[in-house]
Image (cartoon, rainbow over all chains, first blue to last red; front, top):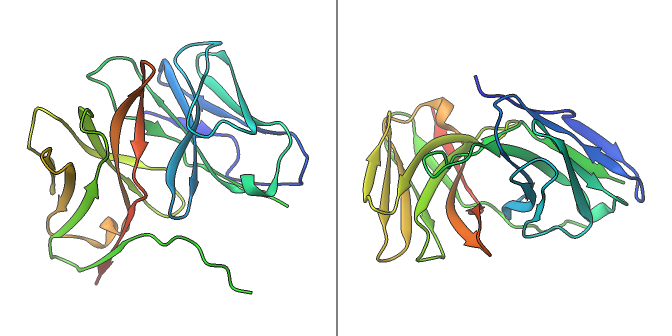
Length: 114
Length: 114
């Protein structure tokens, strides 16, 4: 079965801390994505990556960065966490090709910034 | 004081009845659409997808209808069961500077009444 694993289910951090959210997929997918999910706003794309060491900004990249050193791992970094970054963070992956559009999601990390 | 946030559209359906969840999309050039189901505490799961060269596609107890004239998508769930209670998201594939991504709607909460 396809598996996207996010390292933490819940995280509580303080304002100003540097936060790392880790995501690993075991499907050899080329593409990986980070979304945040807020009530009434749906899923908004933060960053995505089409290949190792490659990254592209999504719709709301401000305050975030990413790292993709290995194909299976895509990390989201909050350089200096702020309270407005309290949210559910979802990682997803997909393979290449028009016949394979669907994203496979992890279970999410609920981040609270105090 | 009490905070006011955005609320998800909600739909309550009697167990065994059929349900229809609607979605309006924004980009007339979108050529691929997808529905996800998100249960409480889990990441979104793929339900069904459809390409713009089709009007209808059926899966197991689910049907997606696409009306390109009015940019409308619907998900029909037949003979609903308690396990169908979840938030349902539609998404369209959009292209931004040559990069393709899925853009999600805000979701609809479906509650199945036993």
